[in-house]
Length: 431
Ligand code: MN
Ligand code: MN
Image 1 (cartoon, helix red, strand yellow):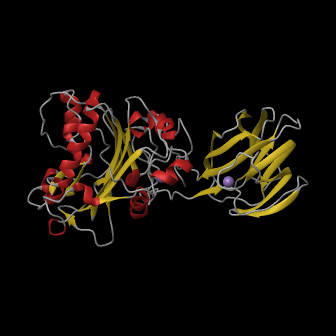
Image 2 (tube, rainbow, N blue to C red):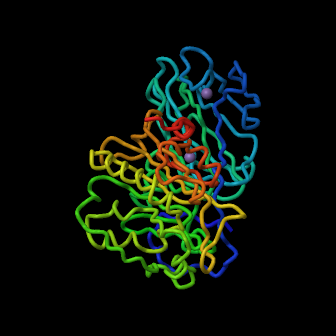
Image 3 (cartoon, rainbow, N blue to C red):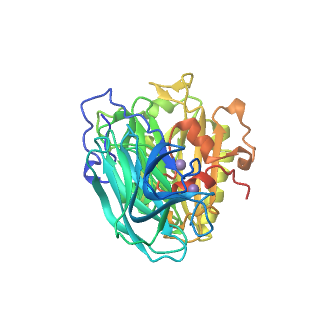
């Protein structure tokens, strides 16, 4: 059973469900993404065409390639009259969100259109969300929240019936149970700390992907490993004050007792630091905010050379950006394997620690401000003293977000427009 993602704070802190085997493993970031690049169809008459994702029927619609077509790449869909573009295949993994780029063809009048879904292989259709208006000569992104499990396919219908033509392109569908899409996504609905999206499903009923949304950060916690899967937080100057480090490392008293946690004794003498994911020094406005970072549920066993070396310097450098006025969204956690070390009563030591950072230029900005030029920093650092020098420069550990997604199975920045994600997640920061 897939657990429906968050959004409701009512589930926070509730007792977990009674199925300990339901670990609700991470969502793959699998999605359907159709850009019309693989097909050819020059006439409006209804016909099927094979595209990159499968077979689609284009009725009173064609694949536009002219200079009047608004497109990404060299092709896009063009629809006239009451035409439609229809998937002739099903997705079996449901749909979380659908995003579609849309614009008017040439100098035609604005046109209205809608997205329809079918869960019975096209026998009956239901409109998803509101009718949209294509009104510009450059693409706008339409985002639809679907959140339906199981078999599903989609159809785009032009609804105004006029002879004016519209272009659509870059149809992106995320799996049910993952966040995704354009602005105002699932992440922001949960917390400002997950503004960029939720990296993988988490809920109060999944012990190994246990959702904890705190005032200072949001995390998915893994009871089998006794460490977080990922911790996500916003950082800007409003979180930074003069509160001293409280150093009150402790069990997380907001968690239900059924959610297994590390104890202080597990770390004692283990050879590993109690490594904060959301750093103490990122939360210095109030005593309470700082104390919240000392829950053991915000820690992983971290090699001293990593934690006190490049990891710490990077944290400092990010705070410098925040103090200079930037808005940062940070996600941190570990990578694991079958041979990961353990300490104490089975607290699993990450093979590497990772961090994903989105750097925006002014406080209050969100996913809509993220463009293909937005600075995104990914790092993965070895988590054994023998494998990392404490004096190493953190910049040498930079990798693409794609590489961290491959290592973790998470989909970072999942509420950012998929076309933008594709660019910023492939790039390795070099600033
Ligand atoms: Mn295209
Ligand atoms: Mn991503």
